[in-house]
Amino acid sequence: MDKKDSTPIIIYYYYDFTDTDYFCRKLEQHFRETGHERALEFINWNCYKQQPGRDGDIFIYGAVALTSLVDKGYLHPLPEIIDVSDMFRWTVDKAKVRKKTYGVPLMICANTLICRKKDDKNIRNIFDLHERTAIPLKSMLMYYYIQAFCNYQNDYVYKVFDHLIELMGGREYLAESSLKEYEGIRRFNSGECKYFLGFTESLRFLETDEYIVRFANFSENPEDQMPLFMVDYASLGNNVREEKLLDCLDLLEIMTDEEFIYELCMQEGDLQYMLPSRMSVYQRLAESDPLYDQLYKLLVSEENGMFRYGNTFYEEFYQKSDAFLESLMISDK
Image (cartoon, rainbow, N blue to C red; front, top):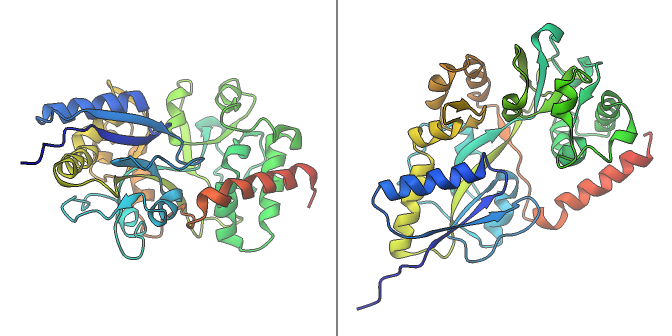
């Protein structure tokens, strides 16, 4: 008789996915509560900058890397037993690779423009904005570029970036606009900037006040013609088999369970302002902040899309970003 496989499940997870320590701790807690004894090994992984190891049984990553991870042989198509009926439909349908489903959507992230209610001027797009704004341009450069390009599809995107740079205060701010060095929350809380371009999760770090939250529109149009979002997925590793496969499927079901997602979004009773892919959670979250009713109405649209790159993501995405940044720092195009 073959020896039973008792090797640990190796989970590569994006290093900044929600509160990662809390996520890992809660996932293991729910796994144990459902009677599982197999060990879990969590490996912190920057899915945007490097490929994972080949030993992964589960991968958690941003959709921008999905096609590359599939083509490089990391991911296994999902069996249809995972229930995705309560997910925003576009997060499922627009994440297929050659008509196959490889991941279950977990969380959505949006480029979001935030201001205090007293400062609101009904901003519909970034060209309506003329106040000093905190912008993490260096880290988000290619995402802003893609979002702008989808609206213009020509060199007009340079006008978008000229305007963003003006809102920041000039080109001298470009070098320090990465998320690691970014002091946008401090600058916004202090009143130095009246607007903040960031993510909904940033709301939990802002001082108590009434805020207006809109998804950023990088065009001159009243509405974004192609709204794009960052979406986090969980997938099976390509080599996982037999009993371990069943345990991994149970983990995916836990990650997409309504109660588990609610616990992540309401960490110890403290609203985290994350955007879950599971629709039914929004009604519960709206009991803590009615903003979630508004966010749900924006996210349910089938016009929504996600940031995805081709199979050369790891070879060229950030190389192109660095080259574009350099051109912005030296050019007045």
